[in-house]
Image (cartoon, rainbow, N blue to C red; front, side, top):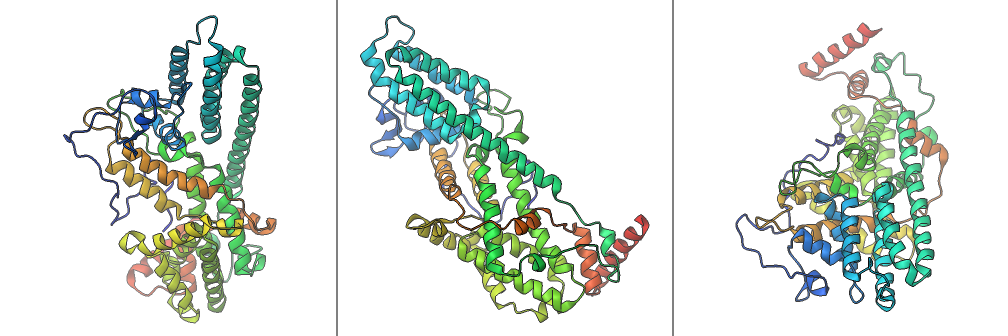
Length: 487
């Protein structure tokens, strides 16, 4: 069914899911982490560390003349650290450690030492700006970045050139992010709803100029355009939004969470959930809208074929939205309509997305699509669009099932390695460029076509096939009375 959108209730817990990450029980003893920078702090006997103090983890992030943290560690820590320390404060701490360790506040500088250190700190800052550009929307972040480069620049003028390149690329990324967010807002404002009273009587059909089949009657083409919409939404979601969606106060760091403007920090993620809901209701609207049973059956068969093409493409989010729309009560109760439609393929698709066994069938299909993506020779074969609400719920359960801190105060880094694995996989999938040509007419319809509210769907459904029991009769009567009362 469609998902709720507000931050507090968006991530409803699915039954049957259990975290696959073993978490330490309160009171368990943890091995003391290795203190100080160097590969040993990131790896213990070749394995990732399980826990460490926040200070140790920050120390590990800081490069030296002879050390640079592993890429996986950088991503994991920059992703998760925001739960404990705001990004500007973290970067300030990193810069302080760099200045102290490299004696960058001394004059003259040790040129040979700084030239070994310089490329490493530039690499860290470049990775940070490329992976988490939204962190640098704050002026403090850019100020810290410029300050540390200013300190090492006297040893090599090339550092200024590199800094300018980093800042230029960062500016471009931030501009694209702003454009994407503005376009999402614009689409939301353009989307309209059909008034419930317009479907009160089938003799007066709602004044809708077009329906989906008049815009596009080819299932494969519509599946391609749905994939366009999905990948566009995915491209705007930053990895930090997955963490910021579950920010809570850290009792060991104070009483306030690191982020006060939570709505803004997860706006792209929430917009994607709203798109899923819209597609659910659009499918249901298209099915309930036609006055004749034969036309409704034709629409059902069309969306079954679209869902199958989405499955073949690897677009599981649109697939689940279509199935959810067809399973909404106002649609599923249309027994005469369903009896006239060919539904064998629909039941096969339902089986693939069956929630039984924690969505075992879907997860198997997802692994197959991910494997195809890894060995693909074209963007067409690289497409993997996961069922997004389930991905969010997996992350929710990982967050809820394992503490951020262990009883000894250390950060539960094992938890965040698993979080980074899941988010990192998503980041790989979202970078695929859509190989299909855009059809602006279809995309415009998907974004702006009017949709029924839930009451509107029920009213249209009862007008199509009369209520079968007293509960439905009472609801139909109430809906009609409500509509007539507004006219």
